[in-house]
Structure formats: structure tokens, C-alpha cells
Length: 439
Picture 1 (cartoon, rainbow, N blue to C red):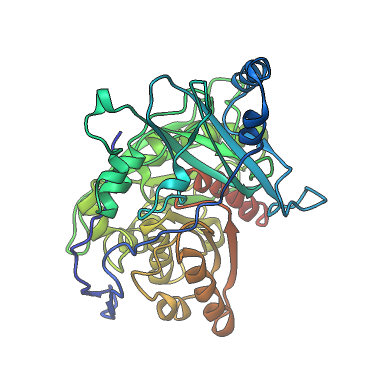
Picture 2 (cartoon, rainbow, N blue to C red):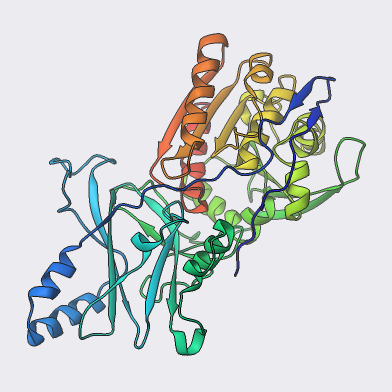
């Protein structure tokens, strides 16, 4: 599936929250980001250059018996203990394709629009094999795709990711590759399914299916538009058994992705069944389309205000089995949804006690003043090393809040990009930690 983007062209404007306070957008479009891609000459390339025909045949057979990426720990700078999440590993991909003239690996957060050469694979002489090695931390996790380009079929002399000087066109071309046939792991996301790479020390990311058929239910709720937000659709996950004590409530933005592409209900069933999560209700809010998302999510109005001023209260009234305690009410989102979760908590007048903000788009607004004026909160900010200024923005916000508020703030740095691959795993892990602290 070809991904979609916010391509720019918006101008910052002033937004007024439900209390009459004005907030000026600092930036109205996604900031550019080009990071270094940690390409190294892999051990495979060295061995291949030195090997004769018979040795190359054995190497090929061994390679094709393994899944991509092949992870080894002999990289320079590797922690001798080999047990730290930041210790380095060599990640090697092998693609078998006849008659290709170029093969490109796009991984979330690791692509330089101006120079895609670190993402282009090397052809192993005398074979149909292409390879590439990156040196990355052992806890790295990313979604990725592979593009194979053959001029007779594709036309032109230049691969499409090199054919345009426009960064968005180059990125679209790189991301429009196929799933890796040599990798069984998959991850969903807003733009469909991708292959999944993960290091040996990546956070728990795979959740077994329930052993028994689940009787959990998804209820679809609709809410009419108001002068502050559009009409809303919410999918409510209800656990198959409700304990005697009221359950926590998790509110998620971009609910259509969590429901349809991330298979969140099955994950919740599994985690509840295994005892890793308590029974809980989860409200997944539809962010509709790209234009609505930009106008309704991540701003001090729209969906954040809908959650803060209406949804949480309505769900508590509809279902007495949902706890009314702020500490049992968690709001979470990713990207625009991440800053949206912070806005919701800031506007909620104490109804929301906890936030998990993943890769929050803090470049769009300064939310420190509204959060300082709110009730004390438990906030976890999470951001990746491979997503531009997201991590430094989270750390800056945390320093401000820690110095001037009674809120508890934690920043988790993640070896990943702007990516559902780690958002999913970290959300479940962090949610489990939060709710365990209530018991």
C-alpha cells in the first residue's frame, strides 16, 4: 500500500481551548528529518569476496536457510556483557532476485532523502543475491519494506527513489516496496502491513493468541457533532469477564488502526487471560481521514476536548463497571495522538490521571503551560532515537514539568523510528506497569 503524508502547505494558526485560552501553533507541518544510516561492510560481503565457487555455494545455502535480518553480535563497540539494550549488533539482509539492477531496504527512521545509497543493497558477484548490513542497538525494532528495481520492467535508467529531488516523492518511492519474503514477522500500521525487524533485546512484542475462544465484545458508539468537535465514532472493547471492582479505562486515538491493523482486541484478550493485564475497557476513537486528523487530533479542541469533556464521563455513566478514579483512567496516542493525549489530560479538570504519549508531536504546540496548570498527572513520554527532534522535545518537556509541577514524568528513549512496530509493544508493556502500580 502506498503511504500517505501531510505534505505541508499549512500555516500556523491560533487555537482556542474550552476555557478561552489561546494557543499558537509553533509549526503547522511535519519538520524535515534526515538521519545517519549506520551502514557497514558486513561479514558476509568479506567472506563472499574471499570465497571460491564451492564455498560460495555453501554460503548461499546457509544464508537462504535463515530469516531476514540475520543478527550477529560481532560489531565494533559491542558491549562485552552483550546484555545492554544499547549494545550493538550487525543486522544483515539477503535478497535473492534475478536480473535486478537495484535493491533498496527502507526501514522506518533510517532513510536519507538526499543520499539513499546506505539503503541500497550490494550485489554479490556471480549470484542472484543482494545484501546489506547495518550496525544497530540490540533493542532496535522497525517496520521495513524492500524495493526491487529492474529497468526492463520499470522503465527509465534511474530507480524511482533516486529519480526525484522532492523528499516526499523519494520517500514514497522507498516506502512503496514489498514485504520481505524472507521474513515471517509482520507488523500492521496506518499504511498497511510491513515486515518486522527486531533485535534480541527489543521489548516484548509478540503476544500469543488466547488459548480459548474469547467472549470479549466490541461495541460501536457514535456521538453527534458539537461546536467544538466533529461527530465521533468510538469502538469500545469490553472484557469477557468483569471483576467485582471497577475496571481501568484506556482511551486510544487512531482507534481504527488499533482495531483493524494492530489486532488490539486479540492482544488484550491474550494479556488478560495470562494475567499480564487486569480486565479493562478500551475506547478506540476513529480519527477518520488525513484532513480530519490534522484538524481534530493533536490540537486543544477537537478529539482531545471530546475525550476530556465528554467521552470519559459518558463511558463512566454508561458502564458502572468502569472506574471513576483518575488513576484508573489512561489516555494514549501516537504522533499527533501523542500530543492529543497530553492535551486531553490538560483539559480534563482532573478526570484523567495518566498519559502514555508515544512520539508526541511537540513541535506543533508548547503544551507545558496547560500541563503545569492541570491536576497532578502520571505521564510517560516515549520517543525514538531515529525520529528527528521527537526525543529531545520529550526530554525538554519533562524537565520543565519536573521542575515546576507535582506531576510524575518519565521519558523512555527507544531505539526505533516513528513506528507502529515499537509503539504497539511499548504501549502494552507500559500499560501493564501502570495498572500494576494500582493494585
